[in-house]
Length: 259
Picture 1: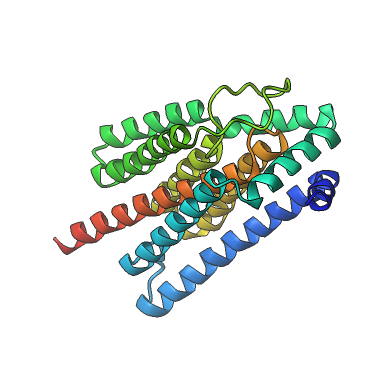
Picture 2: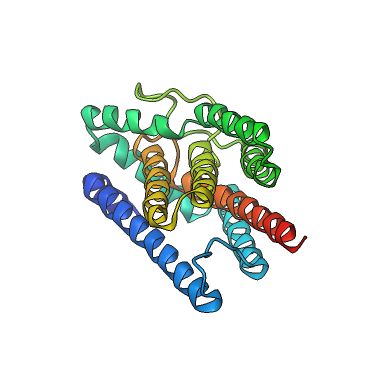
């Protein structure tokens, strides 16, 4: 149990770079596959459409993953012991200078900051009367924030360490608000931009969103502000509401086109 956390703590920069590269490759693969399938089916470069069946499958997947992680922490399974061992190893091995840099990066996903930015985007959509985007945007971000708060108070998991000088956190640990809000905000933000940009800009937009979500979530584990399972649960929760928001936006768009 202790060997793997120790090894991870000794190779954090390399593992962080590797995970970021893998996330970017996965995002690019998904983008290219969706585009090819849509072109083959319709002959148009309209690959944003999320079919209801796909949306239902993704919602079930992310809901099940979140529920499994919630149960694993609540039941204090081996995952909890791994979480604690990894947090302790990171606490013992990482240098102060490295943590100071990561502490700057983590602010990109600060829930309060994303909430303010989310309100600004919602206001702009409302002023432009883009209701078919305004409603999904509010559903995705509002659902993520509210359900995350409920989960935190239900589980009431304490954070790995009660403040070690690099980040100041006072709330409960599970799930990670940084991870969930980053997933919902940057994911929905990318969707809005994809609806506005020409296709030649889509690949860069997807890459930027994937990179931001990845580095913010990983920073929470590295800083020991959250356990690994907190971040994974945050990703699952944010992804659930992201899919729901995009599915709703696409349904509203199909309805408008039909009319």
